[in-house]
Picture (tube, one colour):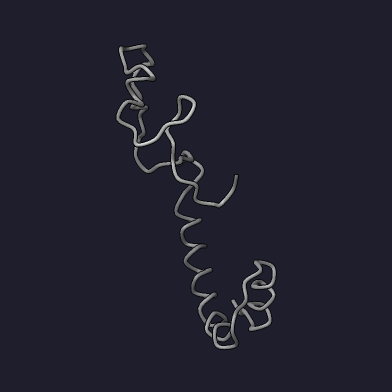
Amino acid sequence: MGISRADVAHLAGLARIDLSDAELDHLATELPSILEYVAAVQQAAGDDVEAMSHPVPVNNVFREDVVRPSLTQDEALAMAPASDQGRFGVPKILGEE
């Protein structure tokens, strides 16, 4: 499969990637091999292979949402270096009001 330097430049333009002349030349020789590998991978999975998002089964590991005893707002803020109107006070980092 022949991919010209112009083809690579066109693809780079579509992807909004700025490539140098050396990169265009290099990718023009590398892309055919990459496309062959992609074609081989596409043939490996047949219609009998179910699509999946993970290679191993994923189980939900979340605990049940049960109300349990916890700190009150005053207890949580008691050791805070700063608080304001019942919330933790943190330094401004963006210089905004």
